[in-house]
Length: 120
Length: 107
Picture 1 (tube, each protein chain N blue to C red):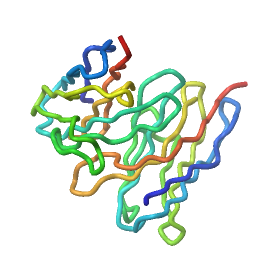
Picture 2 (picture 1 turned 30 degrees about the horizontal axis):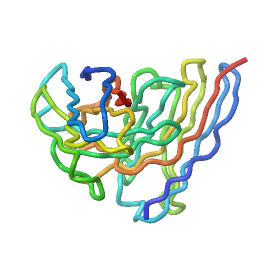
Picture 3 (picture 1 turned 45 degrees about the horizontal axis):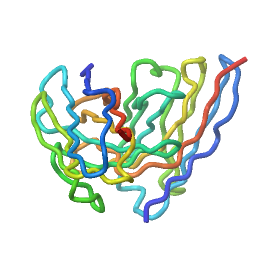
Picture 4 (picture 1 turned 30 degrees about the vertical axis):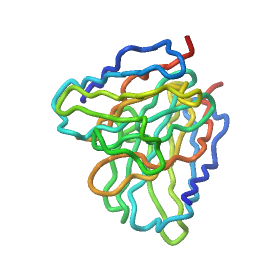
C-alpha cells in the first residue's frame, strides 16, 4: 500500500524559508513522478510543482518559480520542496502526491498533508 | 494557462439520486482529465482519469465522460459516503489546473 508522509511544515514569517519532506513507501519510488499540490484554507486545489522519476526535469506554477525548488533523493525514497521568500499567499496545506504512469499527469496517491502558515 | 470551470458550484441531493457535475476547459485537452473527491479534513482521492477510466477500488456508480472541452462526472445512485466536494483537473499541459470544485450536499 502506498504511503506518503509529509513533514517540515509550520509557522514562518514572511520572507522566511521552510523545507518540506515527503517520505514514500509501498511502491518503487525511483520509477514514479511526484508532485506537490496545495490548498489554501477554505479554498480549492492548486498544483505547485512536479518532478520526473529521475529528477532530471522539474515543473512549477508561475507564482513559485524562483522561490520554490522541488527535488528528490531516490536512495532515501524522499521528496522535498524547498520554499524560500515565503509570502502570506503561500499559506496552505501542502500535499505530496504520486503521479500515475502513462503520460497522464494524474495524482493517484496523496499524503495526509502538512500545514504551512506564513504570518508575522 | 488552461482554465477549468465546474458547474454547479454546489448541488443538493438525496441518497439514491443521480448527480451530474460538469467541467469545461478553456481549450481542447483531448481526454486528459481527472476527477477527485475530497471529504472535509481529508486529502483528495482520485476517482477517474483519462476522462472515463475508473481508478482501481472506486465504486462503479461513478463514471466520467467527455472529450476536448466538455466533461461530465456522474454518480448514478448517490450514497451517504458520497457527500463531498469534487474537483476536475486537466493533465494536458503545464501548469496543471483544477476546477473550482462542486460541493455535493444533503437535501
